[in-house]
Amino acid sequence: MDNLYQAIFKGLAPLAKTAVKESLDNGKTPQDIIDESMIPAMEAIGQEFEAGRVFVPNLLLSARAMKMALDILKPLMLAGQTTTVGTVVIGTVKGDLHDIGKNLVASMLEGRGFKVINLGTDVSKERFIEAAKENDADIICLSALLTTTMDYMKEVVDAVKADGLNVKVMVGGAPLNQEFADTIGADGYSSNANEAVVVAKKLLS
Ligand code: B12
Image 1 (cartoon, rainbow, N blue to C red):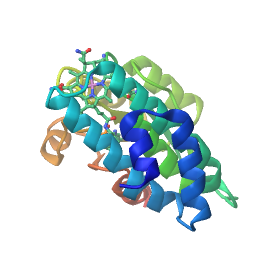
Image 2: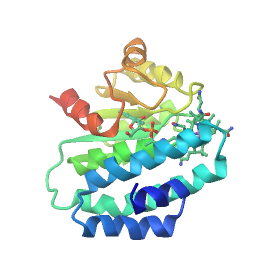
Image 3: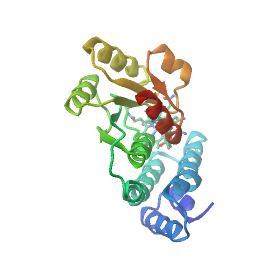
């Protein structure tokens, strides 16, 4: 439990900024920092919330600290990139405001050479399709964290098929699994941001 883990867990954004720089100075890569400190801290605060020991404001503070830290790492992950592997449109589906995991997936994809159009949260099927067309996207990535919003993913998949759009759809988010992804007719699924890159590359090949 290093300083960055503590800062995100406690929702202390200024401390998170200092701690992320400290970790970089200590020779850690952005990937190590995300995997070893940031994701575990978010998981831990999530467990505290589920156990009723912390509340929504604590989650918001942790989410803010997480975003601040990620904002510092993002340019470093993009440094030196010249070619684009493919284009991805990503968003959290309609009705859902969770964006931490989705932003991590977006950053990982960007960091590995994808052009990423991040539509944010509460995104409708029409907006996904419109953005995919506008940007000639190869993949649409859908995120959902609520059992009440994950079903909307099927609506997006169906709308993409009905439109005849030549684009793959990849889904993810804590309540999902491969079986759900198969059931709704998604082309790809991953339970985490690192594997999302592997799956996305496979979908393009
Ligand atoms: C932080 C949080 C919030 C924050 C969100 C802040 C933000 N900017 O995102 C706030 C406080 C706003 C919030 C609000 C709510 N939340 Co909330 N929240 C969480 C919490 C604690 C953590 C989520 C998180 O960020 N995890 C960390 C990230 C890194 O993990 P992740 O999102 O799973 O993403 C990873 C993978 O899933 C995957 N992935 C994610 N997206 C994608 C997409 C693709 C394409 C791929 C391939 C992979 C992928 O890769 C990511 C990185 O590895 C979870 C509990 C939990 N343990 O998950 C509850 C949780 C999701 N929330 C819950 C609830 C109920 C709510 C509220 C309804 C609460 C309320 N009463 O108001 C509202 C809903 C608001 C809305 N309309 O969306 C429930 C959902 C229960 C359910 N069955 O649906 C949970 C599970 C908590 C609980 N047990 O009660 N929440």
